[in-house]
Length: 198
Image (cartoon, rainbow, N blue to C red; front, side, top):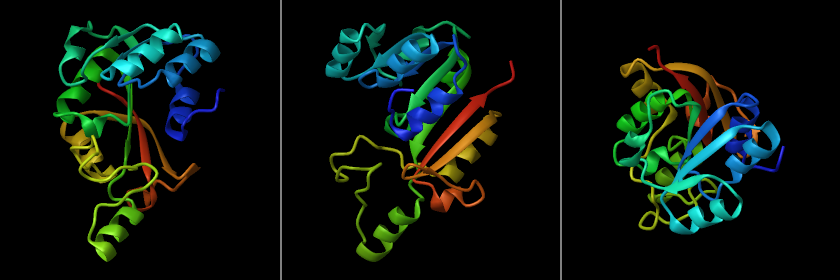
């Protein structure tokens, strides 16, 4: 598999060969290209940034410019096997509604996000009293696109409240997997595979 960011590598490993995929907030199309070329998936994407849309088109990918908060409504119900939202949930205006849309469009959904309860984030706030800058949160607070600071526990609660089933979860500290039991404290990044009964 093409060298991918760790959360994208987890998603790519767990997408079925030949599946149909919609990547919402697909960035420059790195994941879509890997799924198309190496797993023979039928891929399409949506991306807000015009420069990233251009990069996707240059790779020969089917990507439109659109906003996760507004434009997913144009996709039909259950039109893809997997809807993907990687490192985008925390940047949306209404993450709960975006999640509902993902599971309306896709039979299953992959969602990944930085965990704001990661121990280094907590320590930075405790000792320095400042919002941290980490590998997963690489910009200062006033430049970040993150408007919702979600933790793994917050996300699990949201899923329970909305009747969403967790089919799989993976937790990363750096590039390494960490224990599920202590993930809210030890994981820098979380990836969930979700579904909802019809």
